[in-house]
Length: 215
Image (cartoon, rainbow, N blue to C red):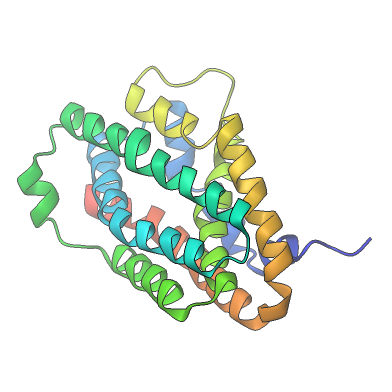
């Protein structure tokens, strides 16, 4: 049996993929020892590109050739706009991050890079390009979240960030994204590889940047 296209992309992204999912940030998140300053820096930046992420999802809906896929992507937009965005707001309150701070803190280089690659993929009109970026953004997070220990941290900021990325609905969504890229990606293999690899590089840099900003 031949290797799945998404598995090939992941394998070709090594060692960056494994370095991201085994990052210091992830280990400290699991242990509940992540400094508030680091978590605040990370969440401010992660929330910063939510707008571009919604544009990417909308572009995937527009480029898809499947009504069922459009419905699935649309439901995910609802979750991101609701449950996940509410988590951010609650976390900012608990961490003492004001709206003014969220508005004035500068984008880190990886944040600017994520905004750019999401908008680039969206503007390309390529379903494969949008799926490549979405697969990295969601599958890589599922991969690290699946490594969480059985006992979650007591701090809801840490615990809920884990469970947002490790629950049955999220696992099903990642499975859907992979199947779609397995289907659409081989026809635009080089485009898929390019966007996938660049997105993995940005994910690793994003974890690193949380410490540069937080410490």
